[in-house]
Each structure stands twice: as C-alpha cells, then as structure tokens.
Length: 366
Ligand SMILES: CSCC[C@@H](NC(=O)CCC(=O)O)C(=O)O
Ligand SMILES: [Mg+2]
Image (cartoon, rainbow, N blue to C red):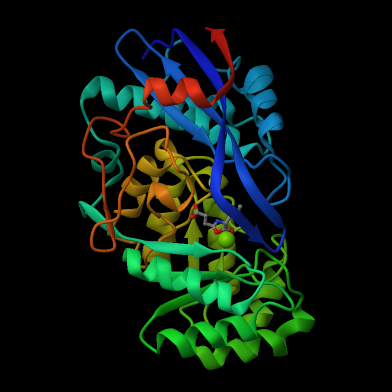
C-alpha cells in the first residue's frame, strides 16, 4: 500500500472529572492522533502517551518527535503493518509512538480491503463486557457515591486505584456497600514495594479478582516473590511491554493475569502475539485503557473481543471521560459495548468536533 503522507494532529480533550492515580491527577488528555493517507483509504491511530512520563517513560511530545524524526522517515513508500513494524524495529522503545503509526497503517489497509479490525485480529464476539476504572478520591463517601453511579450505568466490574494510605479502607467500604458478588479489582500503578506485602495481603480478605501492578514496572522477580505471599492474583500492566516480557513474567510466576494495552506493547500485532502466548499458557487477559478517545477505544474493542480476553476490560463508554468524544460516542448497553463492524477500526473522527479540539496539525509527505 502506497503511503502518500501522514498527519500528526494534537487534540486537547478535557476530562469530565479529574482522574487521580498513585502517580498523579489527569484533568485533560493531550492526545496525538496519527492519520495515514493512501490513494485508496485513510487510516487513524491514537498515541496513548500521557503529557508527562509518569505512567511510563513515554510522553506525547516525545512520541511526536520520535515519529517525525525517526519512525515516519524510516517507512518504505509501500508498506503494510508488518512492513511498518519491521521498519520501526531498529529504533529502541517509543512503543506508544510505534503503536499509533502501526494502527493508522493497519486501519488504512483494512479500510481499503473492506475488512474490520475485529475480523483481522480474530474477534470471536460482537460485544464485550465493560469494566470501569475509579480514581483515588478525597473521601470514602465520595468513592461510594461514584461507584454507585457507575453501577447504575451498568458497568459489570469496578477497578479501584489504590496507593499506600488509600487501599484497605476504601476496598473494604466498597465490598461492604456493594456486596460479595461485585467484580472488584485494584490497580496500584507500581506504588508499593515488597516490604508492603503484609498490607497487600490484607486485601486478600475482600475477594478481589486481581491486584494490578503492585510493584515497580521493571521488577518481575519481586512480583514473583510477592505472588507467593498474597492470595489475590497479580496482574501486570506497566511491566509488560512486549510478548517477550509476557513470556518472562509467565515463566517467572510474576503474574497470572495480564492487562493488555496495544499502545504500551507497540501495537495490535504485538498485542495479538501476547494474546496467543497467554492462551497457550492459561494466563487470563483483559484489555486495559489509557483514557483513549473513540479512535483508540474502537480499536481496543476489536482486541477485547478476542477469545483469550476473558475478564471485563477498562473499555468504558465515551462519557466516562469525555463530554464530547471525537467520534460518535460509545454508549454502554447492558454493561457491554458493541465491537465496531465497519472496515478498519470502524469509526471516523467527526470533522466538526475534531476541528474544535485540534491544537495543532502537521503534514508529513512521504
Ligand atoms: C491516567 S491512568 C492510565 C493508566 C491506567 N488506566 C486505567 O486505569 C483505565 C483508564 C481507561 O479507562 O481508559 C492503568 O494503569 O491501567
Ligand atoms: Mg494499570
């Protein structure tokens, strides 16, 4: 597929409410969208990097720079997703930047052939059950009201952000208020150390599905040690940046569940490789989120519909984060979101909305 040129478009997406985690508070998403133009179709990809390198080492200005100076210039004039990944391989890291470019190329090629991303990846369902991620709050009563609101909207699983000082008490309160059948899990974003094992073991009393990324992103050995000291299954997020990382984590016993985020692992092809590896080893998967707009959300739903994704993911409705999405909003129905069926990612940014939220746009001819 010949690529005529690529647009880098920065958009500012205010959040409907601050989203607080152990590493900071988000009030707006500074998003980089990548649009690949070919004679037959256009394709979109969303870079999930945050404004600052707090979730991982990537940040959106750095991703734009890596794309502009290294990744896009390395592309062959005729490329498909596999060729794009090969061309980007020599450059280290920048997986979120690479994922955005791969997705845009994949989207363009699938649109040209009239094939949906779900069909290409191997989706086995046409709708997926949706969980919701709930940030750290100023008080337990505020948390309980927020969780009640999301349950009223139909979410089938609740994930609570935790950190030292905000863990056992809020988890106990949610479990006691909403009962033993609520699918409940926590995400520490690497806020604890192995010395906190007794504190994390105290969460075993609440029947959690998992504890996500309790320890440092680069410490699988400590996670393997922690796994022998707590009963709650460990799920890794930040630690898993590739199928190799997933294989290492599985063989070390560092986790029994993986939160798969295509942006974190360099794209949907690598995400599918992790899916296939995890299935072969009986490791449970679910699809994570990075507060994506409808562009990234659509693509994540295609991935979340693969057979190995057996837990509800962080694939929430658009309104969880945005008053107005850049695509037609994804709306929860009976706790599920429909997987787009159109060619490629199956959605298009709405031109009027996109223009309103655009901060800058840059055209790079090939
Ligand atoms: C700003 S926090 C982004 C990373 C976080 N993502 C979520 O909690 C879910 C976000 C979403 O619903 O998209 C995670 O560590 O899993
Ligand atoms: Mg996480």
